[in-house]
Length: 178
Image (cartoon, rainbow, N blue to C red; front, side, top):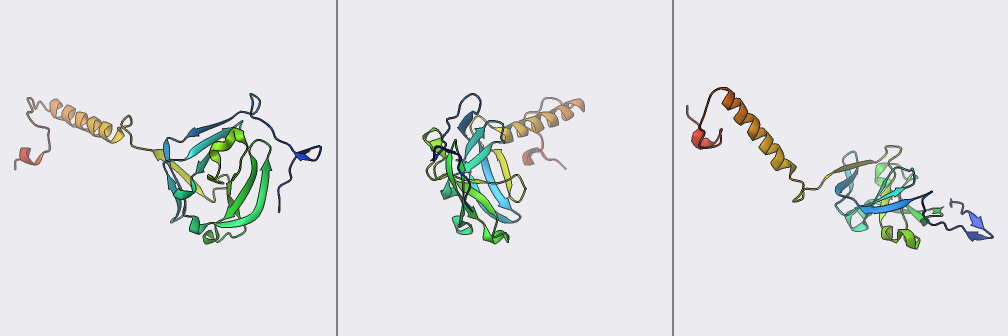
């Protein structure tokens, strides 16, 4: 089944993003994991996030970060006047062989050329879970921050018990006395 193209005098309608229908593409700052149950389909730190007008943001994942052996090309296509013609894939391993749950713009319009060849997954019906979590970077030192908060908490508890002049951090093996 093919998606209907809006036509203008027999030609497909091509629209450019503007203030009334903005489209922005940014590099996703999270690790994107796509899985269904125990089946891991994709994991990437190089996803692109496309925000289009009032639609929810969509993560586009590079094909090298997807287990392409799980995907099967379908004959289904759709047309978007802002992005171009989309091709679809199915994931037969999920037991839903007729469901076109993955799409790609192989030759998108020039205004969204960054997503060429990247794949996106439907998540509106919750058949696929899309999980994001922050990547560890030099500016995002949350594990160290958590450790520092915990350490400060422990030191404050010890101080409230009137233990003073600690030369070493508490709870180290060399400080342990029975």
